[in-house]
Image (tube, rainbow, N blue to C red):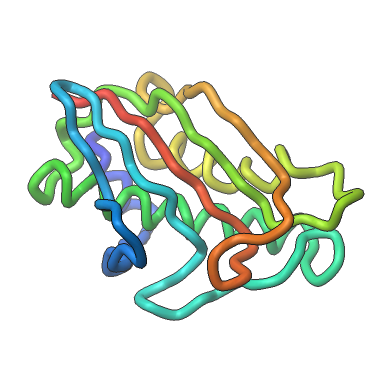
Length: 154
């Protein structure tokens, strides 16, 4: 099943890609590798989840935030591939950043929201990826999370 078919089966819409807020681009392709800039949990220009995990937000809410970050990444990937996700070979790496209280120990569990989304959309062959999950003091617009990614493509 193609990623587009999986998105349809899961009834997942992709958001409009947020405009960069600095001197960077949403993706950079070099050969068969696409690096995607970090995406926060914004949906069509509106911040959905803001605050600190372990203070303002619980793990489940953090996972929802990470999932939105992942949907923004998939939207950027689609743009990089000219509108179709069929050229995706593998998700190589996700980098996850969680706006967390200093003693919040569940950062990896929060980023599972993005990792699980990649498995749902790209399937068992293409989805397994290396990953980093880091708790940080703050993120742009006080976002609950931010995720970046690297994909192998045809």
